Length: 342
Image 1 (cartoon, rainbow, N blue to C red):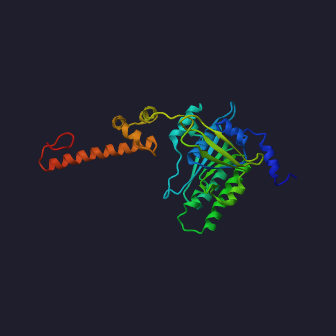
Image 2: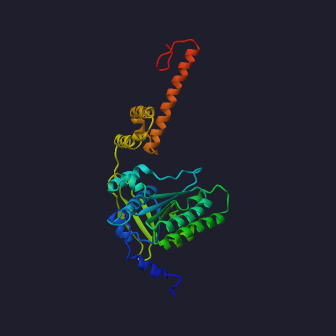
């Protein structure tokens, strides 16, 4: 009869024979010895550096070997929208996919996105991940964004011990599901007093702990390996390159705008049935083009968010002009085409 368990050492040794996932950076690959299947990696530190690494890991995991079924990724987003919205920023990810030789739309179609907005939902999310891993053997990587965030932002007023119990139950199920499926698990978490959030239980559960630090305003960062099953603690300086946006040089707002409009014309406008809506799309393009300055200087939003906001403002402007004309007509006053009285 075969044993009902596998020793931790044997589990780790078996993972050494399986393909690793690249970080997209030679220095980080050397530091970690590759990102191996079945292990749990916890990353914390500077938010921008952590996000950069997660994005590169996601894209590298989507790279397939010729003749094999295209691999997939499960991305778990944990965030209470009443405190701070957590989202997957599609636009820079599409840039990175394209720069890596992966068709953006095809690459995005191979990403499962699961979201949780409370600790209870995070536990349910773990159950959904178990079903997903059982049903799809092509998932190569599970990414968990801000794994301890829901415990920190919990609005139910629960005692800390109860919050940690719920967090531990969810994380334990996620870790077990990934280990059984021999899928790499990488989770990010916040940083408090130089330590990763989530408590000692979370640190004990991880196979690898990596801290990322930003050095000044340049592109260089420092990665500190704090825990690893076969490596001593060490650190390395690394860089993904000069001023990069998720894997390539940051394009200008105008270049990003023109690229997005061309893509919308091909995939969205041409699919519209109503001719009036097609014409309306082009009128919106004119409005967007006239406000490129505002699009350029606004930070903290995606380009598509800003286009939607500009479209709403354009509609509001037209409504105000029509209201002004109606008021002028009702008052018996002549009105000009722009809504002002003459």
